[in-house]
Image (tube, rainbow, N blue to C red; front, side, top):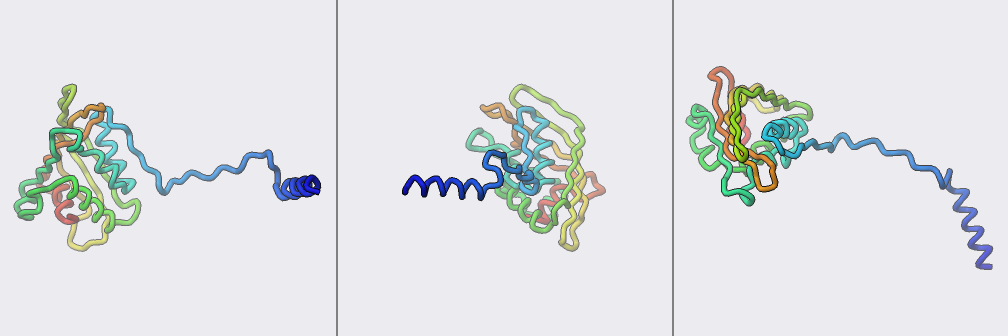
Length: 193
């Protein structure tokens, strides 16, 4: 009796399957939650990762471009454009990684998908085996929903990078400079902090 029941169950299950020996149809890739992060084994990869993090709206990948003070003697420092610092007294006095996170999060809340564009153009660089200094001209276009805030930001930044014990590079100091014509990245941070 048990044998007849078992054979009957196998036949029913076999008939219920279209083809028990075929492979299933593959699922399409999840492109909405895609994240691009290149291990920053070269200092220029840090800037590529910043561009991807902004474009893909990924706060955590953005933060990974900055020094981790638990793995370094250095702490992150942001030096804003002097005019912006004067106009926004106190805003940048104790600027930290958490301020970077908060500013980007607030910016993402005010912008629709595919509305952030960041481009760098390298002006100069100097490197040793453990540190690097890059001067980058930047342009950031931000199609946000706030009034009385610019949507295009241009200027020049001087980035100081360090190589950690695992060989990854990260920014430990960022100095921002206005081009005297357009709002700077410092202005963007002040507006969305």
